[in-house]
Image 1 (cartoon, rainbow, N blue to C red):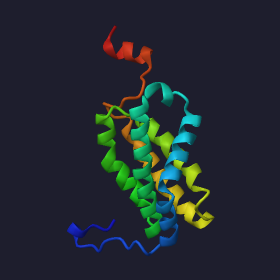
Image 2: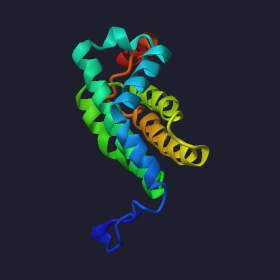
Image 3: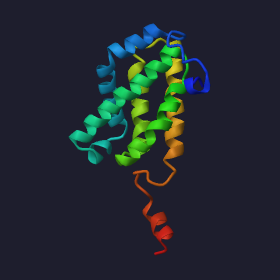
Length: 160
């Protein structure tokens, strides 16, 4: 990983597919809206858990997620998604957003960006989404995630 504090050069955003990243940025609002629609279709309980403000936040989060995917495509470095997910998961815990919902949103983004990217560009984007998904699935096991727990296991752990 390149990091200026370690003496390494910054990532070259022209090393991959900068034209594809520009296409993603140009249609960012349309793609993020489509991704949220796909996530709602995949998990209808999102409508029960989030009010209008919560859905607007998820729409904004989809745009931010798409920015990281476009950086990954521009630099041909799928680690952008992984590093972003490692940095942002505490924010979602504080907002009481289950990390499983972000996994669903990532899958919606995967479907939405397929209409804009070629197969070679899509492969980099898929690896960035897969990296973020792995981080979210790993971090949801830690305490503080807002996902619904199994009531039987919760009763056992309480000692009831």
